[in-house]
Length: 427
Ligand SMILES: *Cc1c(COP(=O)(O)O)cnc(C)c1O
Picture (cartoon, rainbow, N blue to C red):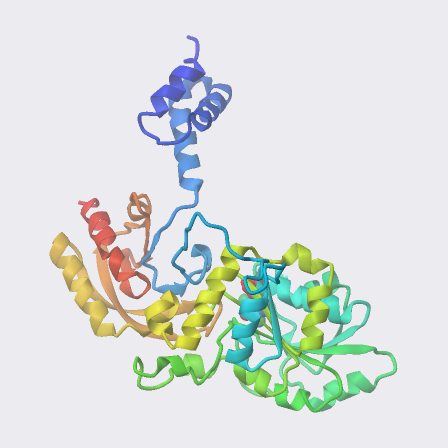
């Protein structure tokens, strides 16, 4: 028997998939080549695999607010057909800088002289090291020579940047004296003191770290990679939403305090606790930031207009103190648990399935490891993850002991209707 023709197969696939004809032909052709005995089944599998590999929006029911696999901080998309004045100065009609607006806003919010933005914090650290310490030495505490995840390891980043790592202190204790000794040693040519926030783990017991304010007493510029991008650990934007600043915020290193303590340059991610788009911020002393901006790597690392526009809008929300209503991460983090319980009851009433359950949400993205926020959701018998994931708008859930949990803290209230549809489709 001859395998069916590629064209017949592709037209058959078109009944189940709304994919471009050329894509269906590709799926059919590979099926005929690889599985001529069951080309129809293989073509269907190919098209299904392709559909499920496309980027799409999903409902995050995991309760991990900054879910690394779901792109960390969720953001509302601005999809205008119009271009932006990315490098066009509207005041005088001349060429402008893409960094002007965010630099001005960060200047006001953090009390820094200047700031630039790159594609992520890994790029920010790499650029700072390359621009300020290439061919020279950078002192890092042995307790901070860390791996953040996804291949970001301080010794490797250091090597790629062309700077040399000088380990100081020990894994559990590093004192100011250790940095002083590294600077004074004739073997070394220390260009920077790099302080790295070990975001995703903590060591306890007989430990000692050297603070930014202590390091700032030395002659060498201090660079602090604070990681999460918490702007201010007094979190003034929570006033009127939470009675107290939760400990997971108070304990995080924050940008404003790092600068006030004397860091010359700080770097942080845009899509962690800041709640913005994926990007990395380099902020601090104008001369040092200018050196980073002028480095050839800057051109390779610069973000596009949509990223900068999204970041600008997030920073404007901080200035306007509308963080808890306008930035999805902060809105999720501060929703009263009672509201979540009410939403759970409504979903259960609408579907007639599931039970209301108290849950603990996680911050995620390696930020505030171990900290949880009291939450509420629905639980369903059995492992329903695959069916929920294959819903028209995928719903991502968690399973504990053969029970499926959908945590409503990480779900936008407008998406409860999607959860109702998805749960109904399980029946
Ligand atoms: C998350 C993190 C990074 C990496 O940031 P990306 O934005 O993911 O590139 C680097 N350093 C620290 C301390 C972090 O917490």
